[in-house]
Image (cartoon, rainbow, N blue to C red; front, side, top):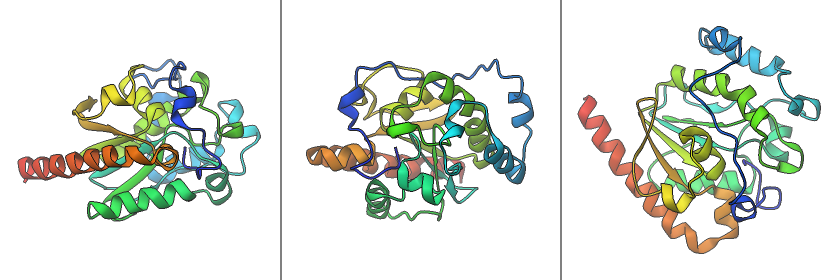
Length: 224
């Protein structure tokens, strides 16, 4: 999640759990309506959403933040306590680490970078989103991706990777290679909150970031 280390559960605590997944097919009768929304309408729809139980305890929705035409799209799990209070993803201790990770490869929040989450409301206790909760947000995230048209998606952590790639594979089994999300290249790395609790894996995350930077150079070269 976008929470700080004190708020977000370590990935290993739920590594074996079943993770809700985003499907490219939706039974939601409103998904076609969402698929036609522009940015202002989509933001209003998310703000007013009552599709799952997460709306009951939220302070506010956390839509996402950044360059709406970004080449880089980073997707995490969901808002934590500080994100719920401020309405912006990744603003706690894990968010500061994410900003440092971006800076390490020459990026900056809001400058050719967009940051979003699988769900737009904070799950109680910062638990992993339930399948119904992830499903309720699926069309919103899909529309964000369609509007941004990123060149590269970075899945931050197991929940994001499992939802986007529809797999129960571990982070270790997913990182280090390029995946595909509906035609967009996707790489998997560790969630910043996990890295705060597992410092040795920062070296692996750096490898992932270097791979992402090299891939982006190639992608921009092909499309130039």
